[in-house]
Image 1: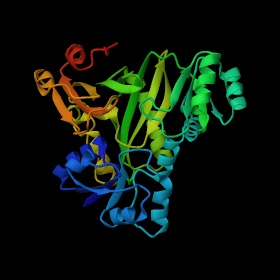
Image 2 (image 1 turned 180 degrees about the vertical axis):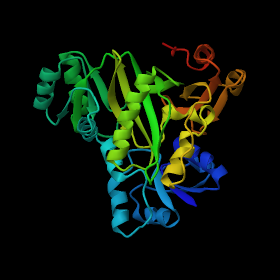
Image 3 (image 1 turned 90 degrees about the vertical axis):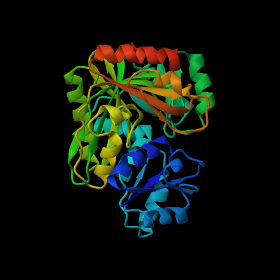
Image 4 (image 1 turned 45 degrees about the vertical axis):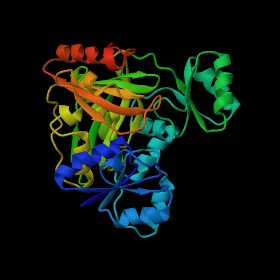
Length: 369
């Protein structure tokens, strides 16, 4: 079977690497060349809206999926209207909700999932009214195309507000409260096309400048896992979902507050490659092909560290016993994810000590809280 993937970044690459042992083939579509996934499988080079290439991808594939949530939905709808019978997983309704922060917030509210106080903003007057109701400090975000800290600004004063409005007013916006959280977590699970569901242990995440730098799993008390898992299952059931889904949450005073969701394999789940019985990448493939899902139990206490901007010397990481390095073969660039490393330990204390030693060498400004 062939999996057609829109997007050929490192997530697509890791999907392919997880699928090869299952005898699966992969075909990618991406405008960027050379793309990370193209190092391991064939790539069609061109726009995501190129109907000729989309039709070629559909004809050559048994199922279509994506490694990036900002894929143009209309192009995929036109593909379906054009008579393409290949299934698209996850469903387009979930992709549409994840692409628009207002739709996402409304979804959380509809499913009784706590989220931040927020307001849609289409004018300066809307913004002033939102600030009067929600108060400062807050965060202004573009409704679309924001990830890794892009498309958002923290505002703590009237001057901040005016600067952010001046910089972002050309796009539809959302204003929300700035959450004084205790920690950030994410929950990842998979649902097959026939409805089987499996959920991974909770992840604890540390961000710097809007980019995920460190994930530890399993994380937090069991009641957090149960609550986050219930929220995830509501979203999976709502969309009759197929594939892997992630919800990112803030924890404040023991209460979980949903921030956003990602209808795809997720950076905070990279630890599952070495640290879980079945990786998120393999379970995504199993789910979209309606195969039995794999066990999600953690094999130990795991940590994942993102490598940002440029790779350190290989010996820096490989000198650490038990460290696993994943290189994405992407050109170095400030703020760009170029690889990650993971480790698995017998105890949380041992994991944290080993991860902190590694962080001192590859990300000196990041520490374990």
